[in-house]
Length: 151
Image (cartoon, rainbow, N blue to C red):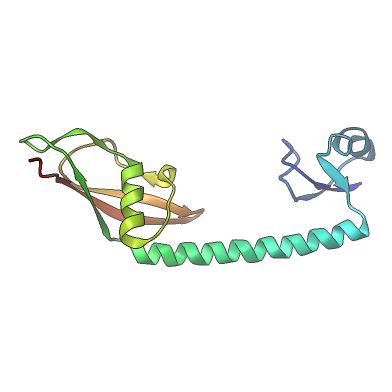
């Protein structure tokens, strides 16, 4: 029996997948628990429309990610942090601060979890890092940490 998954099901598939399962499994387990629905002609037509819409959305998101990558690839973001006399920071520079800096300078909203730092940044200087913008699309940037003037 063909069913359309309404939610992610371990070892079967993800939400929206069209899969073939035994009739008993579908009628006694998946359908009553609202994990799947029977793939009737009407439901298949709806499913095809949703798939087309999802493909368009994914393509649009990927194009946007490539545009964002081109805008920030190889660029530098400057972070001001309080530091001691020898350039040692009071604390460290985080991925969240870098994400905020990218948002301010380039207008691109990135999740801090997608920023991969080489380690903790605890001193003034220049540090390379990578950003996962979209699955399969990464950009390389540099963060320049400068000491804030304390009066």
